[in-house]
Amino acid sequence: MPRRPNPAGRNPRAGRPSSQRKTHAAKSRTPKAPDAKRPGVPAPQPAASAPAGPFVLGAIPGATPGKWIDAWQDRMPDNPLELRPLAVVAQRQAIVAGDVDAALVRLPIDKTGLHVIPLYDEVPVVATSTESHLTAADSLTPADLADEVLIIPSDDVLGLRADTFPNVAPPRFAPPASTEEAIATVAAGVGFVVVPMSLARLHHRKDVAYRPLEQAPTSTVALAWQADRTTALVDAFVGIVRGRTANSSRG
Image (cartoon, helix red, strand yellow):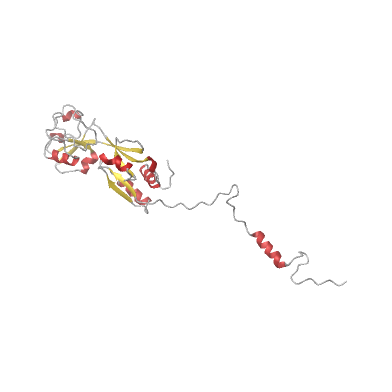
């Protein structure tokens, strides 16, 4: 019996056109896109954007943030750091008001609502005229200051009082308004001033000498910022101050 001719393009084994069979095979090999709604499949996350700058750092007189600023510039080149000088009397207000993102401050400070990290203690020094007999020693004690005139400026950061050192003499004039004025006064040969080492260096004069003072109040420098404004930039600076490397996690 003669065979019936097959229609053109049909495969006698498959029973359907070869073009349809190829199309079906191609579709079966196409991988399905992950369904974010299926259990166990995480939804795609948007790429993290770099925090906006600049970072405003306040600093009281005598603070030395140079090494931390250098590290910031190397690590955060797209986020400039702005250094803003602060008076000690206004340090807390500048933080609370948002004038700065963080600040290098002098303790004590009202810590209410703040994060505060003590950084280092400063050695106190006696500043006096280069002609004073006090300069004969490499370092001094409170006993060495007996009968000398103690000058306490209005912006004193050590919390000194007239009775802080025994047997010192009070000045016969009003307290100088600033540490700079007090040091200018002792340069003229009148009395002595006790200040942190950094302030002595800040107000250095050729006619004034400085000697470390033992058994005297120290001044602690700390990093402080508003607790509810711990931004990504604040966290980055805290990491630098604490010594975290660019690749280390928070600690």
